[in-house]
Image (cartoon, rainbow, N blue to C red; front, side, top):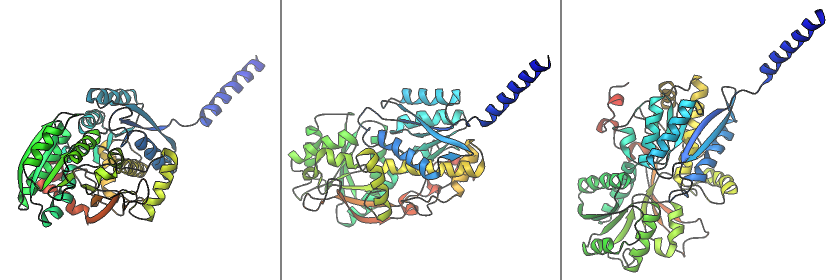
Length: 403
């Protein structure tokens, strides 16, 4: 009997020791992104690798737990994005959500995060709704939004005398947001919007839209779209010499390096755009790019840089608070300055907007480009505080009330 008790006691002690020595459960961030559709080149794999790099640079652990990520492809479908995010959060699979790509898919993920009092790191979408009508304790908006892009582009071009504008706009929420951000600013600064036309998502024939834009005699024609739509717009604009003949210039409210490579420098050259990040800005961005490129084969887009920043800043706030609850963590994210390889003491406002600096850029000519990724020249800089509308002019009631 004594031997039996001893054996039992030994087994119990062994079990306790094993439990004590067991590795802690991972702290997991869920990334729902575009892995198979038209925005996969500017989010997708690059966003996942950027998040991994942020985790590694943070040290790999938070609150004593190894940090991991899980990923899913939303296929640019809001219902898919929302369902995945909800499932992960309800199962306790993830402690936070990140990326989202488009505005509609991001909104679906944000709704799931709100319902479970968790944080959504918005790093792909550009709609200002996330720091206005949909502002909350759950959402922090990194990278660009359409208001900042508009302010970066419009003022400098109007100062050049380019004061009449025409829009070729994709007919979904993101496209409408791009146009609605630029139009009022054009008028406010003394310019005039002489017309616009809507086109369907993933259109193939832009000829009628571009001929209308050309006939308007607007000095600036804006491609208020993204990805493949921007590429096709520019390819067909080149067929009509729009933007190349000295009579009109082309601008786009949202431009990725993948878009430029997709259309080629001979077509993209002279195109104006705004951006908060470019890989070749300084030594620090070039060093990060070298690491990123070794892992992916391409240079980081602004969305990839934003994902890195979002994950790193989130982990700092979790470590500082010991919490994953949205209000606690985002409050700390707003208290801490954002510092990393491309941000220096950047503020996160009470409405969740991260005040990155912005740059007016122009696509280089083939003669100016020295390598396959040497695509842009920076023409001017706008401080983050000036790039985004003042919070008092926004629609985030909780931020205005100081909650």
